Image 1 (cartoon, rainbow, N blue to C red):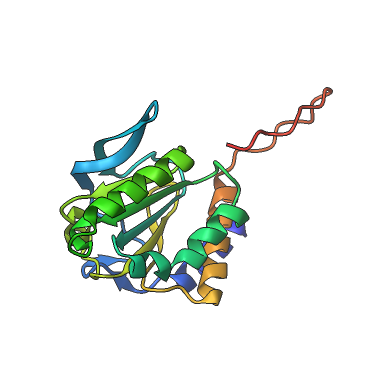
Image 2: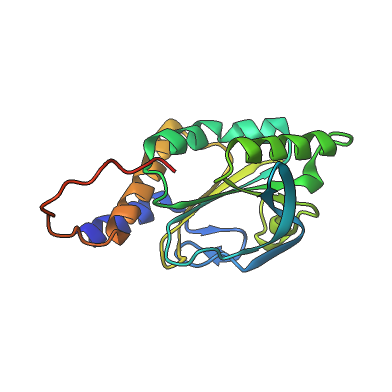
Length: 202
């Protein structure tokens, strides 16, 4: 019954097609971002390493791809803020990719500095700088926008939208992540005779 509910919810959420040629229920094309790429911490310094998709098979994955502009960063801020507070930490993978090729002329350095600051503040966050807009072309996304993609543990796209999610869509997308995380969780072990302490927040 749970699987049936997941499929129904995914069908209600996902459009019939996205990215031009990829149908809902399909997969995002593989993507490699070699110029800049994922931000990594090395002590107090922030560097880069090549980033590729897919990442961490077997995990629910929420990807946000957006133009490196203030306007685009605000499009789905309500959704990303809710992800931080309403979803179980460490149970899914979240990746934010900024298309630096769309940064307003003269602001690229400021955007990169802000990204580095965010990485230092949230070292566990997966932040990717797409220097040449490889993801925009490979995934056939809209310019000057924000796209949200949710894939299940098998890598199948279960939700996609470009542009702002409505309040109702935010609730539905969050619930979709919760349900796929719950469906993928291992069975609870038999109760132990000794209590364990609280799980530390990652």
